[in-house]
Amino acid sequence: MVRSLDGSELLTGSEAGGLLRSAVSNAGGVLVSWELDHVDHRPGRSTKALYRTQVAWPELDGPGAPPRDELFGASAHIGEPEKDLLSAEQSLLMTDGEITVRIWRYPNDPWLPMLARVCYPDVVGRTLTELGVPTGLPLEAPVPIEVVSYRPGRRAVLRAQLADRAVFLKVLQPRRSGEIVARHQHLLSAGVPVPAVLAHHEGLIVLAELPGRPLSRAIVEEGVEACSAGDLVALLDRLPASLYTVPVRAPWTDSAAFYAGIVGSSVPALGPRLDALVGAIQGGLATVERRVGLHPHDVVHGDFYEAQVFVEGGRVVGLLDIDTVGPGRRADDLACLLAHLSVLADYGASGRIAPEVHARVDQAVRAWEGVFQRRVDPEELCLRAAGVVLSLATGPHRQQEAAWESATESIVRVAETWVARAREIAAHPVPARRVHEPVHPSHVAERPRPEFVRPAPLTSPSRQAARPPLRGVGHAVSPGDRDAPTQERPAGSMART
Figure 1 (cartoon, one colour):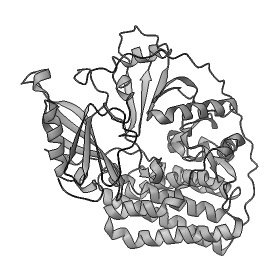
Figure 2 (cartoon, one colour; figure 1 turned 90 degrees about the vertical axis):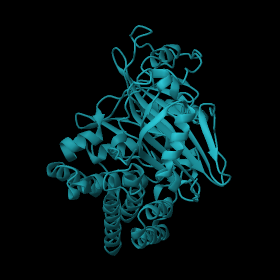
Figure 3 (spheres, helix red, strand yellow; figure 1 turned 135 degrees about the horizontal axis):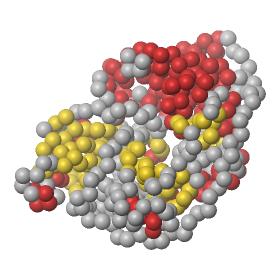
Figure 4 (cartoon, helix red, strand yellow; figure 1 turned 90 degrees about the horizontal axis):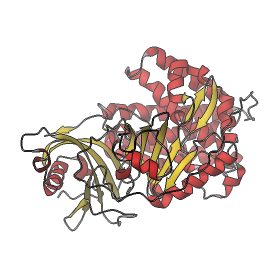
């Protein structure tokens, strides 16, 4: 094995093919081809990777059968033990005494034991029925499944199309799911339009589909008319003060140096600019703290961006992914939204979105920024936006985009633009004031939670049911095992044979 500090060289280089070949051979298959799909890298600690492969299974399919498309996950670490490992029987562990690598075939993720119970069209219906969620289909009928996201070892989200509706299946490490269900119920009772929990078992949450459409789609089609900035602020202001007592989660900008380290390790030439960015963000926030203080005095979403908000008829009707709700500053959430949108708008500079789409998104960023600056400290807003953009700069390499180095540089440039705005505001300060815009109320009725019926044992890994395709893969990693903001993009390709 190649020795590296955290397994990144091993899992992203050509040596990964040898590891996959060994794992596939050990399972009775023949590796035909492989490509790196996405990487979660924690510099100096660990790396997780996802691979798309083609594998022939002569014993299962016959010697002349075409290869199957398969997903394989791998985890490499040095100097820290594997945490929360729950189902290691169907994974292969390899070590050279210095670094340990674990490889598994999707869906047998060692950290997500419920994934295999919901990822096959021919088993998810039975699982839902046992959980008390009627499908409206015959018990043995296949249920169409779409994998929305999969972050190896962390979580997966799948969409199941039932006879009369769709439900979403959130697969987590079992230790986390109960807390998240309780948070959903708490927010629903407070009138926050989050998805209703239809069923729960350790490591699996079944959620109702929200009405409307994601703001990410609406803003591309309608721009600033998708919803009002006041509605977005009011949605966050509905988060109940009772959740102020949960543990504080550090804002993205507290990890600016961490993300800069990830970006710098993939594109060393950006090192001086990254150092300057981190210094400007940290120094600017220190100045803001001396001026207005940075105590967390609000309840925040923690990962508030356009894909998390649902709108209908120009008003906000839903909010997703409330795992990170807790104490913070309103500027954190508003900056997160602006950061994501500014990266999307910058795609117009590289021709990755149509000019008219660029114009609509850019107009929304400018309009909403002006409203948000009347609610929170404008300099803080821009500095925190720069910090979130810096975290998003890890995405092109992680998701193996085409031309990921130039894409990374473009995102770093967007972060620098936010820092420049913060400096201009510091030179000409304007007091923040609370937003007063008309807000359309949203109404969500809480649904009763069904009883759980214990599911049948997990199915054999040799089953031949079709695997659903991945639509996209998820998130960067950050300190403390915290999920990082998502910027969904088509995964690139690093094909090997």
